[in-house]
Length: 118
Image (cartoon, rainbow, N blue to C red; front, side, top):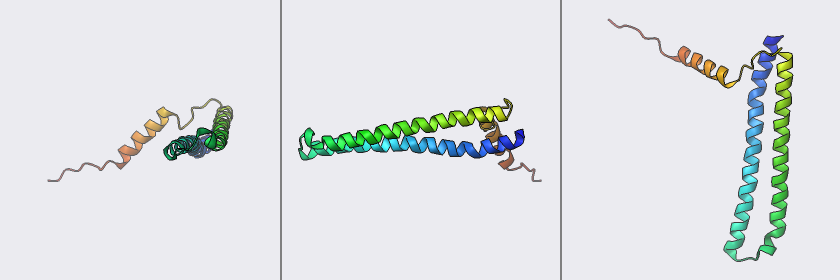
């Protein structure tokens, strides 16, 4: 059973990381849009009051992105707890230490074999 759990965790880890990074990207994109909106408003000489509805709308979008990011992180925590329970405390295969070990082993396998030419 532990072997299957390790395979599932190995398959889920990149999906979790991708979701977390996408949420960060969304937050940055909305924040950049908000900053760009304010900068352009100033550039064209509009009063702040004229841009306020747009800024409030973007603020709402940013808040929702932050809340969604928190939900993804909470889901990550729940999945990690489930993994630990099912794997009976076995070490997760994608911890930093195990990833480094795996990368080193893969590099050794890819290294060309040295041969003596006479």
